[in-house]
Length: 409
Image: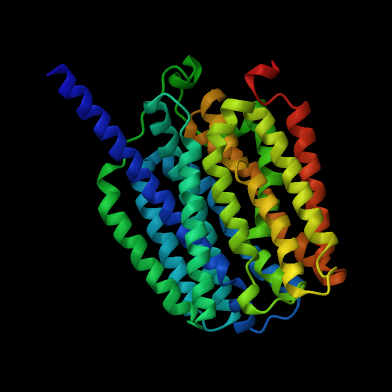
């Protein structure tokens, strides 16, 4: 009987993990469906100025940033179980709405809503995931983010096929929204109520009512340091998520059949996330972050220095794809490693800790569209990518000299 109970618990834990993974898959599919069609949507609305398009894209991080206090409050008040369901369906509906936009102003409102639900998804999903990681007693966060990347890679491939087949974004986004609805219905029953971890919450925190404002007034130094690293990581992500397709279209001037920049980036990001746990065991989390910064820097410089260096379009595409692949490998481990370090070492309740971390790091999402769009407009997009490459160096420096792991104490 004891053995049967043990197997039952193990089976339940596995089903919880698979359910959580399915929501990460849904989020990744939703995101990449939008990102893969950015060049088409830009062309559909006839936006020719890079800085103006940067302003349009800026509405996504504005929505994400405004949602930060809302996310922290709702996850603390309603629990991540309810918020996972609300946020993932809101995210899918926002994607569907983007496909129905008839003018640039309606598109802007849809992108703002997309950003709001994006952040609600991030906070609620990662809060659930950290709880499951604690149940397992070992690091499995990277596998969830790996699932996100796998779905995002699949979404990029689907998007590429849709582009080649000249299928309107409306039908593309409608299909993805229906898939996410099905995933939510099938897995919502396996989400877990949040539990407070007595070992990670101090007596002082237990005695007072958990308040987002109280933790913002005195955030842990660990959250500040990791938040700054996350800020740089999100600038890098934005440079690839929002601009990689545009880079291949406008800088390389590659035909549609060869606009594979976003796809190869997502493939390597996926591979990197599934290798992250292995890398932790061999190198440790600090060295993994340092190596990630090196890959990011080298990748951007390859793309910035050799955009049209060769006479053959095929060779130009191949060289820039190598650069994008290195960036994908580098950025793959940044967010899951940061979140995992918060789960291991932070004394702040998880939902609040992730909100504080997001408050700092999402500044990178706000800066990126205007930074890249401005440099691309007044100079050239290859120079924008060169500037982002320098941020990889800063990531190396910050993770080398900042005390972000217990081994640094």
